[in-house]
Length: 477
Image 1 (cartoon, rainbow, N blue to C red):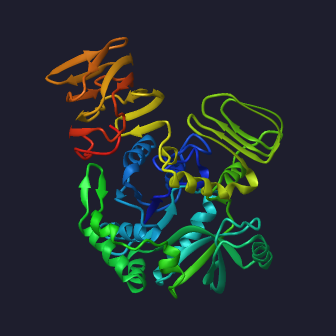
Image 2: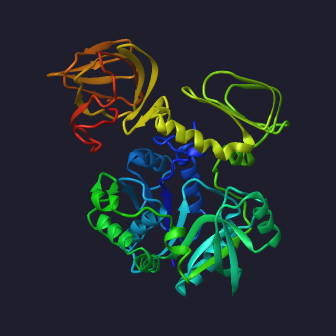
């Protein structure tokens, strides 16, 4: 029987800051190869027999990025469901299950996080066959990972009664342990790491959710019933979904149901949950270092060093993390990589933009990157994809000067439309309705100089937008 993969892409990857940020989280980053983590996950599905096109569940703010990354690898999802706000994995899986029931009477679902690595697909394929047989009997199956070390960053699953063919009833789920307990679990041999991957029938999951979390079930059903198509996306009804309790599938269902089974997997696996785990899975030099970008080291061992633009030089260090982006530098002890989430919490308390945005911000039409800013001015590099167009808009507090450095721009400025090419420029006075379009076949690049008493990205009023964004917004262009 064909199963429907469900890819959960709602996380922010705070432990991988400053590379991973709320507006461009780790599942969209190319951290372990040419493809992003979500692209690797979807490509992995292609190797599984009987898998249908996937359902993706993602944050509303990431919709265009997710869609574009699927387009890059030639995948047309069955649906991209947009969460208006995060409510953890149990509601995300519920709305995906409701969508899957539009395809079949009671389809099997394979639930996968968007940001994990998994090797030995042949073993995983066999485990799916075992899971399918269990789901036919009404079981909700989770896949455990055979531990290779006393890891304190993962939850654990203790297996109970054998069900045959390498599957077991779940005796209990265990929270992330301290190192002493993790060593005991490893020695005992009956524990698996909790992978966050599941297999079950859509109606079986929804029935258990309804029994244990009736309000969550009801709000998810209302949010899905009130969902509306928006371009290539399915946008959940916001009010109902905002009233939905937030909880993980483990707490909401798997730890409470009597129908929970586990299939331990002896496969290479990593949730890329920290810089230390990213160091583990990447190729290392003769000193045990993982480096990317312009990096020079001497007497540095077992470290991870990334540089986006400038030279990073390190001397006489061991087991450190050095991540240098265009607007933030992280230096940390690799053994304390899990604590980077505490730095992120402090950034949130202080309302720092570095928590949310990179200096380069991606939009459905392309991207913009801050180059320099000062009192009453800032300069950006804007890149517009071929055929793309920014919204028709106006600003109350700033004027803009555009200088074309590559490609061709069609500019609406008030009542006139002009065509600009390289080294030509135009001025957009404050309060003038305007738009920018790339009618060419190559990316359009221009320098934008903004000037005025207020340069915040919430100074924008939209009149028309081909991407369905709000007419008046607090977001950038």
